[in-house]
Image (cartoon, rainbow, N blue to C red; front, top):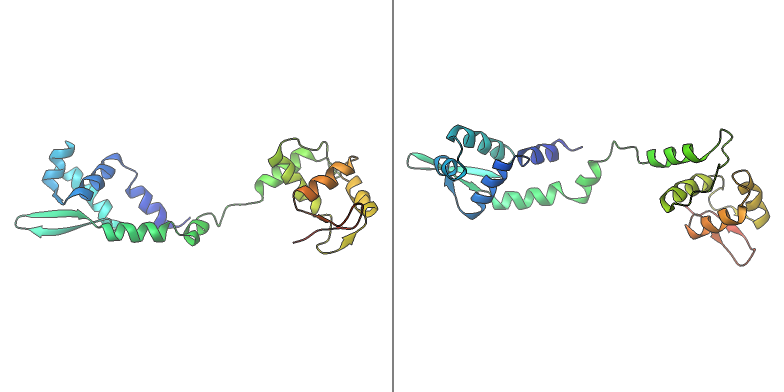
Length: 185
C-alpha cells in the first residue's frame, strides 16, 4: 500500500486533527486560538498541527508574535486528486492475492480428484467454481457439445447445468442449438 496514502490517513485519523482542519477551512487561527476553541493545551494543538503540516495540509505564516495557521485548500485538492487516482488506488492493493477467494471456494467444493461435491447455489460461489471449470477448455478452441459434456462430466454429472452456467457467465460462447462451444479470453 502506498506509504503516502497511509501517512495521509494517519494524519486525519484523530478527531481533534479533523476539527482543526474543519476550523482552518473557515479561517486561519493561531495555536492559542485553536487551543481555546478545542479546550486543548497549546502544546497538544502544536503537535496536531505538525502532523497536518507534515502531509502538507496546513501551513503557517508569522503574524507579529504568533504563527497563524491556515488550511492549504489547493494542496488538499491536489492531494485528494493524486492519492485517490485510479493508479494510486490500484497500487494500494498490488500485494493482495486476488485469487484467494476463488481458491478457497474451489477447495471447499471439490474432492481430491478435482470433481465437484456439488454445484453451488450462491452466485458468487458458483462464479468461482465456473472459473475453475472453464480452465479445462483451451481459449479459442472449438468443442462439440459431446466434447464439452465429456470434459464437464469429470467435474459433475449434471453437464447440462454446468454448460448452461458457463455460457450464462460468459466464460464460454455457444453457436446455435447444439452447435460448437469455445472459451474466449
